[in-house]
Image 1: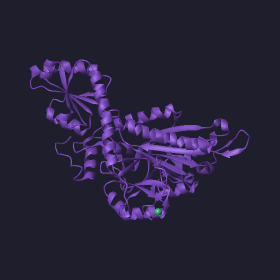
Image 2: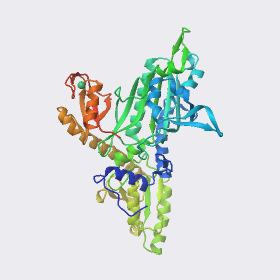
Image 3: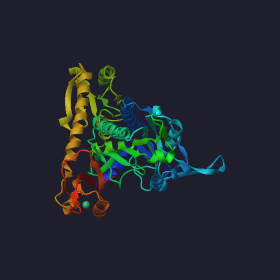
Image 4: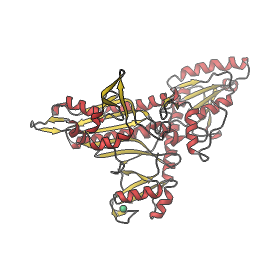
Length: 477
Ligand SMILES: [Zn+2]
């Protein structure tokens, strides 16, 4: 906790972000460079996101399992693109039990290889398919430039890995998961992500097709918030995942993998946060309601506290905190909970006790506009309604911000301007050269080829050749 003000977002967005993560006690720097410690408040947020995803995975037939952290080095050499994509990021264990290992072990950067190996043992016939497994855990990728939550050497995530009998089933699964991610982002995170396919340049190492949800952050940069990959038969061939079909013919499986990580916390911070601090969507906020009792002396205290106690019990369905810290002023507490992004604050003083009311203050509407007097009668229903309103207002505001910063530039010159403070939604011929030119000139990359296309054809914004698809170009995290 600190009295110092946060840097504003317009002064220094990146410093605003770093300071906020630390001061809100979401995470801290670990002794190993690039690693983070997720603190209880940050972990509680992650747990809520986990639950929001996990119930959706289970409702669509997936089960959780746990695979080992250590993977034989040789596994990474089986799928060429995959090893090339990851080799600079691998952390390798060369010694164990005081001796040099015969074969080095890799600390998993992702688990396709080891899971592929196990699936090859488990899958014999078409009756064993599909396999729909998810794993919650952490992975290690040796990153040079790190930011808390956005890019750390070790991060927490879920990785789903599925094997199917047909290409169509694998594709259906890939898109089903993309829908789950988008649905969770909209419904729980209040983040209006855009679903799309990654270009060949941007796709995952070894994947046939990669899909993504892309969110626009408060500085208009894009953040890839979850990905779903269709591997075709690449991994099945490399790891020998084969099955006997109904005609007793040996076939290679079709596999997918998909992941969403603690990076999503970064997306929540940067989509909703303001100069006061975090603004957490009620559905995932670790604390949904904070009650601040207000009194100046013992007489007022004995009037206020019993009412606080009673209302606390009535509001037990919510994730609630009573701020009974005695050494701090109410004003300090208000700022502190605003900085930590609690969606709703309830103030109770002697006057409120007298009137049978409370003062409610919304985090998403600063100042007087967000304050309402609520009756103590039926408070739980009123709080529920307010939290639902806050949740939808946050999505509405984020959507309005996103749409106000997506442009349809008329030519390449205009594209170069708009990507400085927004996204360009433009026709693209699909060539790597055009993609590379935009990156070279502006640092903006293709974020995704949205699944929703306008139809028809146009001219590539870069080279003017005929183009069949529109794409988002943006600078990204
Ligand atoms: Zn082109």
